[in-house]
Image (cartoon, rainbow, N blue to C red; front, top):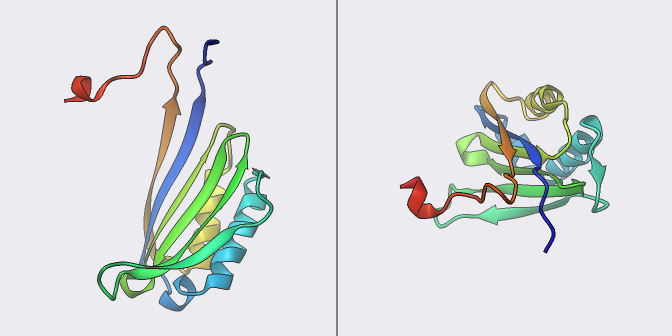
Length: 139
């Protein structure tokens, strides 16, 4: 087996609070958001169009819309909305740099996000000489 080269993955994790619940419940709007956001951050798509669906939790107020779109090489945008909680989760990752500030601004505009928090993570795949940690090492 050949050596797996180190790979750097940039991840945006965003939580949106006090969003417009009608917008969070709108399947078409979530679809449009994913469709436009992938173009905005110049993500090359590996699947043609976003996949969007309604989800339901174990309790009635935990429902919403989820969706994702896959890109290449190794990229993804996913969103999960919770209208009753006026809350959304947005995650984007890619091995190519992307304009995460554009994605944050666009999400805030589309869903009328009153406040948000976000984190940018840089995940690096170690080389074969440095194998990943085991669960026992993390404890």
